[in-house]
Length: 477
Ligand SMILES: Cc1cc2nc3c(=O)[nH]c(=O)nc-3n(C[C@H](O)[C@H](O)[C@H](O)COP(=O)(O)OP(=O)(O)OC[C@H]3O[C@@H](n4cnc5c(N)ncnc54)[C@H](O)[C@@H]3O)c2cc1C
Image (tube, rainbow, N blue to C red):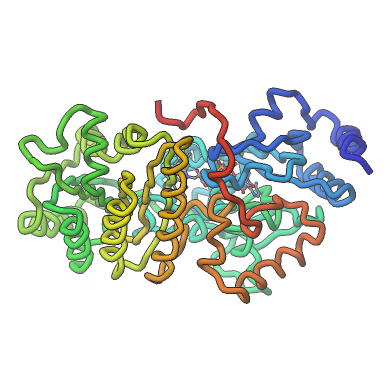
C-alpha cells in the first residue's frame, strides 16, 4: 500500500491527532543536530490507546515512527532519517509527586526543569541535570540515559527510574517495574529501554526516584598553572573523599573563550590564562563546612588564585566562565563537533595530552572541558564547514579521538548517545558479537524495523549533510 493510503488510514483512525501542516512538518523534521529529513505526518496522540493504534498501523504499512520530546538531541536521534511519522509526546506533561515516598509520576513530555521545580516545592530533588534541562523532556532523557554535571555524585537518569510504561514497537502495552523500591521479576527490560534512543518502544509514563533536597550549596572557582595541574589537582581532591556535586575542569583554550565573550579576565592580574576548576558542594551546612575546610586547604597548596561563596548571586558570577565558554567557540570555526567522550579517571590526563597533540597535528582549535569527577569530557573540534581541507582534517581528528578513547578504556559517548552522529564509530567501541547481540534484540522486538530506524546501527556520516540554518530556542545568541 502507498504512503498516501497509510496516511489516510492514520488520519481516519486518529482523527484530530494528525498534522500535515507544512510548518509543523518542517519544525519536527530535525532535532538539535539540524539534519533535516522530510516526514509525512506529526502525530500528537490524545491518549495511550492512540499510541498503540499508531504503532499497529505503522507495522501494517511499514512506516517509520520517530518518538520525540523537545528535539534537543545533538546527535540526530530524533531526526527521522527514513522519514515517516513523528510521534510528538511533548504535550504529555503531567507531574505528580508522592510526598511520602518521594516518587514522581510523570508523563514523557514533562520538562526536567519543571520536575525539579515541582519536587523542590515539597523538599525533594531530582538530581540528573543536563545543561538542556530548561527544554528537554524526561522521555528524551530516558531514551538517551542523559546525564549532566552532577553525574559523579548523583548518577544519571537510569539511576532514578523505578518503572516505565509504554508500548512495544508492535503496539502492545507493557509496564516495566512498579512504584516499589525492590523489584526482581524476569529480565530487566526497563533498563534496556533506558538509553535505547526510542528504537525499542515508546515511553508513555515513568515513575522516578527523588531524594531529599540538599539545603545548602557552596561554590568555588580556582585557577591553576596548566591544564594538567588543574586535572591533577582535581584528582588529589577526590582522594581526600570530598565528593562535590559538581567538579568542572576547563582547559586554558576554553577559559580564553569565556574571557573573550565576557571581555574580562577570569581572575584579575592572572596571566597567562589559567586552567580552571569550578566546584560546588551541596548538602547540609555542617557537612559542607567540613568539606569546605578541606577544599580551602587543598586550594591553598595547589591553586594560583581562588574565589568562594555561599551566596547564590555571587555564585552565578563564578559560573559565568562555564556558561559563556561555549558560544565564543564559534569564533574559531563555524562548526563544532562536540564529542562527549568518557574515560576512566586514571586515564584523564592521557586523554588531555592526546587532545593537546591533536591540536598541534590538525592545527584546529579544540577547546576541551569536562566533568572531572566522572571522566566525561566535551572535546570540541572546531572547523569551518565549506573548507574542504578543514573538513577532512576534522573528520580524521574525530576518528583518531574515538580510537584513543576506546584504547584508554572509555566510551565514545558518556551523555548524548549514538543516534546518527556517532553511528560511524559504533564498531570502534563494540566488537561484532556485541553489535550482533544488540541487533538481535532490536530485530526480536521490532521485526518490521519501524521504531526510529536508521539510528545506532546504520553508519551515517554527519559531515556529509549540510545542517539547516535555523535558530533553535536553546541556541546561543
Ligand atoms: C544546549 C544543549 C545542552 C545539552 N546538554 C546535555 C547534557 O548536559 N547532558 C546530556 O546528557 N545531554 C545534553 N544534551 C542533549 C539532549 O538535551 C538530551 O539528549 C535530551 O535527553 C533530549 O531530550 P529531548 O526531550 O529533547 O528529546 P528528543 O531530542 O526529542 O529525543 C531524543 C531521543 O529520545 C527519543 N524519545 C523522546 N521521547 C520518547 C518517548 N516518549 N519514548 C521513547 N523515545 C523517546 C527520541 O526518539 C530520540 O531518540 C544537550 C542538548 C543541548 C541542545
